[in-house]
Image (cartoon, rainbow, N blue to C red; front, side, top):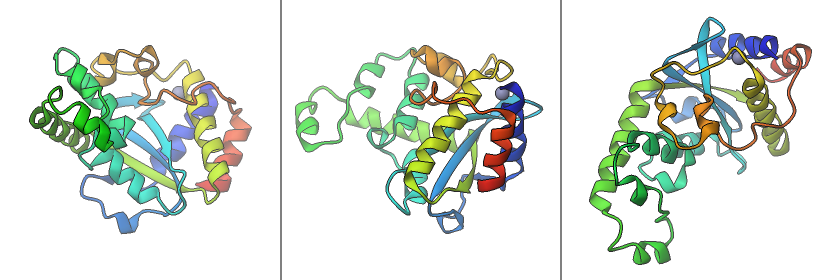
Length: 207
Ligand SMILES: [Zn+2]
C-alpha cells in the first residue's frame, strides 16, 4: 500500500494546483479534490492532507468554496476541524462546537454563543486556509463513483505506513486520534485499500 500511496502522491502532485485567489470557473463541475498543506511532505512530494467530494450534481466548485472560504463552519466539517485545532487551548472551543445553522439553534444559543468571537475565529480559519492550503481536482462524473473513489483514496492513504504528519502539523492539536494520524478526514478511512495496479488504473481512468 505504500507503493499505491506513493503512486497516488506522484500523480496528484502533477495535476495543476489551485490556491487562494483561484477562479471557480476554472474548476471542474463534478469530481474529487485533493488538498495539500504547507510544510507537509510524503513520498518526496507534497503530502495529501485531505480528500473530499460532493454529492449534488455540478456542485464541486460550490462545495470547495464552502470548505475553504465561506465563513460558516457549520456548513463545512473541514473548517470546523481547523477551528478546533486553532482553539485547542481556548475555552471558546466549547461554543465553536455548537451548531448554529438552523434558526431554532440560533435562537437556542443566542445567549450562549459569542457570535462576535465566532466571526473572528471564522476569519482566522479562512486566513489559515488561504496561507497554507492548495488543492487539485480531477473529474468523476457519477456520484456513486465519486464516493467510492474518495473512500478508496482515503483508505489507501490511511493504510500507508510512510505518510505521516510533520511534528508541527496543526491537525495534531485535534482531539480525535483519527485526525492526528494525518488527514483532515474522519469518515471513510477504513474501506477498500487499493493495490498499486488498481491505483494505476484509477489514475489512468480519472486523472
Ligand atoms: Zn503514503
